[in-house]
Length: 340
Image 1 (tube, one colour):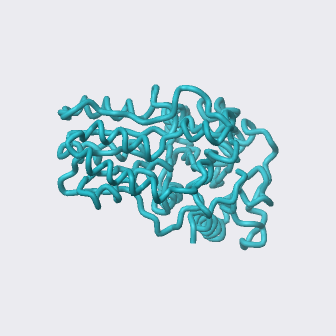
Image 2: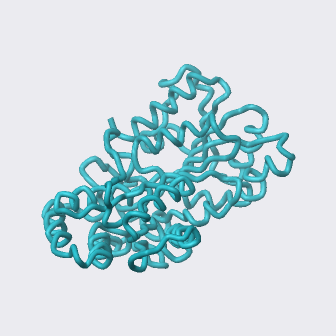
Image 3: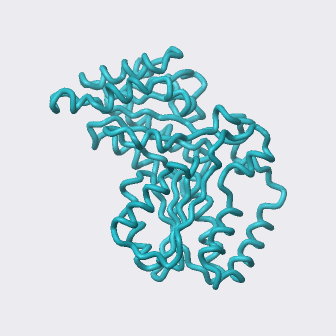
């Protein structure tokens, strides 16, 4: 089973178990990347609602519905479409509890997909994680693996706030047994990552450990929950590499480094950041490969952080490169069927 099947099964269980739940989507019959049930898959088909292409109206509708006992899950095909609903998210949904003195709440789950590969280009390969995290009252998740996705769906019953999940398209095809994150008793360095970056970072870290280099990988589906774990790792390693899915300029990595400095972490060398350039991605596969964070960027940065281990890192890089021979840069693996 892969993550898309897990998500579909979780939503099916949720809808069948709770008559007050509703799933709203633009393009129900398309299956939303095989992650939502069809009408024939659930007990009460009327719990599935087709949305018009009006994102602002859709968020206004589910905000009001959630105040009166409906439990909405709403799906936007791309994270960029959420920009059209910013007024409703910022002015209404995120503030319901505060504007009503706690008498009303608006818990719902908004799923938005981050595109990459197959020519997604400037308009459909953005993530805007800094934007969503800057809105008080929203809980933002960026899952990488099955346990992260399970955490997202568990939030529906645990929070009275809107939950946003930014789902990288390439994480949908990851096998559910895939785990992310690495922890060592004596780490040489610490990597902070989230979403698809955690898949890359974990693969690199596990390979490095076979060559005598111990790198912790702290996966962060929910940014605030990772701060303490990063601090504990840095107290041992003193060396930080922070990865952003989007631009590092004003990114989560900068906030993390600030948090560590304020908490008194003493770095053995200056922290490093990896992210995209502060410009839109290209639709050209060769140029896109240079735009997004890659394993090569990780190896370069780790060599800068750990110059005394450069020989071991170089050997691990060579093994990694050989394993990637013949793979296309805009397709993560055979599981990915595109074009979206």
